[in-house]
Amino acid sequence: MRHALFRPFSCISLAIRFSLLVFPEISPAASPGWLTAHDTEIKALVARMTLQEKVGQMTQPDLGAMKDLSDIQTLCLGSVLSGGGSDPQSGNTLSDWSNVHQECQNLARKTRLAIPLLYGVDAVHGHNNVLGAVIFPHNIGLGCTRNPALIQEISQITAKEVRATGIQWTFAPCVAVPRDIRWGRTYEGYSEDPAIVASLGRAAVRGLQGDNLAGSQSVVGCAKHFVGDGGTIFGSTRGEGTLDQGDARIDEATLRAVHMAGYPPAIDAGVATIMPSYSSWNGVKCSGNKYLLTDVLKKELGFEGFLISDYNAIDQLVPPTRRQAADLSDSAAGQVRTPDYKKCIEISINAGMDMVMVTERYREFVSLLQELVHENKVPVSRIDDAVTRILRVKFAHGLMGDNPRLMPDKALQAEFGSPFHRSVARKAVSESMVLLKNEGEHLPLKSTIRRIHLTGSGADNLGMQCGGWTIDWQGGQGAITQGGTTILAAVRNAVSPGTTVTCSTEGADEQGADLAIVVVGEEPYAEMEGDRTDLTLNGKDAGTVSAMKAAGLPVIVLVLSGRPLVLGEVAEQADAIVAAWLPGSEGDGIADVLFGKTPFTGKLSFSWPKTMAQIPASRIGKNAPLFPLGFGLTH
Ligand code: BGC
Ligand code: BGC
Image 1 (spheres, protein in one colour):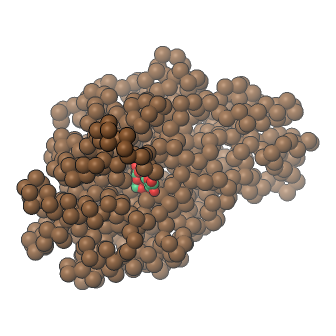
Image 2 (tube, protein in one colour):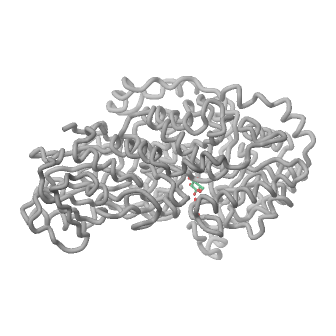
């Protein structure tokens, strides 16, 4: 099988092969030596640990689910996470997060062995849960930059903002290779092209973790979701029209060539954790697949860090009987709670899962896993291996020893959301813009223009620019965070004194304008809720474009979206079209390209379909897409 992995591009499209010329070949992987450098000490430590202490290390509750934080001490927990929207009770500022992190660590330090926690968050485009953090473009936009050095710098800044709250672990980068843009997580992937994902995912790991994870400004990274999350089949999951957490029905060569491409480079760069996917491969859930987790990932690819399950993912390993399912109502996450939780634990730990994101059922998990060991259903050697792997990461990160670095660094706090961090995001925004059409050469906008009218749902809407995984799990509309510029504010910042800028997102007041900028797109969403059967641009935005056209104005259309949208008549009506993706908080980066301060350099990271019939990607080949992968005009 090694053979297949290292010749990964045999069965993919020409376009993908073309990009190989630009991106280096995937090289054979193995975790670097620094990850195992403390194994002798770790062996001695594990030998001193009780079963309860070991199982505690393997358990990760959600902050929001813990009624009493002192459980960290009594259960000797090894980790805590804050899932999307799981903010500190006191609030959502830098100091609220620093305080709650500190409180958790203090409790961990009171345990017999005083092993600090790893505190995990989804800092997937900046430290996006925290008010005032700089919000970078989502990965789909970054994929259009084709700029690994920039992605590394962005990840470094994200690491610094995360460390400013004391937290030391982010569930990023997502190295999914989305092949069906109806998937609501498409924007979490850099590209449909595995070579781009491989190159940028590696850069992200380097940026987050630094050379060896030991630096005071590095955080533990997590490549996710292993594997095939972007290859699930439409309708294969929780009902009609959904793909999230679905089934990738593909052969092993394709799984390896397309969907596994991000992992060898991430492992080679030292990624310390990997998250197995909720999804299945040919009907078998990845979270319980021993072949994938142990044989491929750990043995063949030489991954020496640890596996963290996805949010309650192991609960799905034993499907409830029909009768049980009928008796159970769907949980908030749309999952039926399995009654045979103990069996789920047995399957996943034996498959190679090392730490479990149990979120709420952590007490139950801790006692059931100990029972399984006593009943010889989970071998002690497996538990020791899991704990060894977790401790490797804690040692490498400098958390062990007499003076672990647990307090947030004041200097980093002073830089949180700083103008410098925002300037890097602004550059990333500019580089991620893709100019799709420029008829009549209205772009770049001339400084002599007298009056510009902005309209459309995204014209003055920071939440829509940021998308999901921003402040809230599913994101939100409007002024959701502190700092940053909307597109309206950015255009106002950019125009010369003689230019008037008007804006209305409702109704028309474009009279007297020389040109209209219509900012159209998708409302914010994240996993599950973002799955769609129809990606046609919403009627209201499309109507606004027609209205501006009918008023006789040249129309520049900016598309804020987590994936290509089917533009219909707008593709014809618009004089210029810019794919702006989900650029995040720094709208100024958009104005920079609109006004020609920075040239357009972005290239599509996904092919852009003309009709729904061209989705998924495998169907695009038959008819020309509206714009192919790699497309992007310069002025
Ligand atoms: C998502 C992961 C995320 C985790 C923690 C899950 O639902 O699939 O991507 O890291 O939650 O919030
Ligand atoms: C998300 C969490 C979120 C939860 C809500 C999970 O899938 O990852 O971050 O809070 O669902 O049910």
